[in-house]
Image (tube, rainbow over all chains, first blue to last red; front, side, top):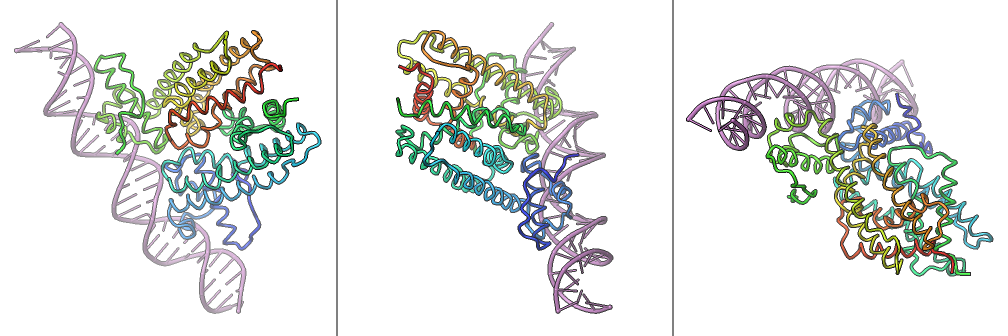
Length: 218
Length: 218
DNA sequence: GACGGATTGGACAATTGTGTCCAAAATAAT
DNA sequence: ATTATTTTGGACACAATTGTCCAATCCGTC
């Protein structure tokens, strides 16, 4: 009874029919893996949700392990792209740092933390990280391994410009992200889609506390 | 090759032999559910790890769904007890607030966040929350529903005593917890046991930033 | 319209898991 | 020592899943 067409964003940038069917499979697989876990996900369920024959999945993507790996790689790419697209809007020389950092935070929450790709990845890493260690290593490299330093660099830039007072940019980055997610931790886990209105509030709360802690004194 | 005897703390406070076997089953089930997820966990695997016949599990605990529910209830109790035991050491009239709050934070991390029960619960809620909605509701009621207000009350108490400056104690509590877990988020998920030395560092980092944001100005 | 590659649906063997039944053995209670 | 209770291990029916094979069919291209 679920509306499978809304579970994940679709990229229709390629339109050979084979590619299209492949995308349908990957999206359906992502849905089912997230819902049932690797062990609980059946190829039949994936095929049904993708509107595709089971055999087509084996033809195009090989066995279940490989399908899972391809899905993870796909979602990792999408999630990473979304994050760095938002990161480009980071305020470098803000007139009103609280307003601009709050806006940036809201965008980051919307497009890179609450968004389906990011949520899917976090859940799958939590669930199946132990079963696919090398996959988890890849995720760690392209997830936290790239995102946290990127945030840290932007914060260091602000500190260098005198907008902030930061000893350890890497630590500040982790704490900034933690504050952003403070209100998500116990709600989002269940799959609850965070309402737009709350996102703005969350961004404001996090930014305010972050600036209280890291603004230059006086 | 895993040492199953170290996966969860055992409570040997009851020693009728039936109770003992029941505990063995619950502990083994907790291990396997955490490792394999509900769908992937097999009764046989649980029985083997508990050193018990499969039939004994059905005798004592009914079917798989019920077994799972009992395990969740058990771990919830243990986790909650640990949390409130630590909460009793919260500094109410600190001489040196940074030192005392850092010590408390370290204890909270050690005994209630990094500890096996808390980690197990968070993982299972993330993984199976969708499959057992009523169970998840229970968890939310006894987890965040009781812990966050308790922390908020203690913080408000400190604020009332002039040690802190807090508008919204509930928000401050969420942010305090988020800062505490800032360095865990992407490490602990894999099951990595956080080393003692890092815990003290994490507690110090979180407390320092929290106090920077919420200490009375001047 | 005919060709060729992709797709389909169904059948298949092999494996794995659940939950039940039961008689034999071990364990605790009297 | 005898009785009551639990536990055991093995067998069983039933259902689900994986991965393969294959003939029939679809669909775009030439």
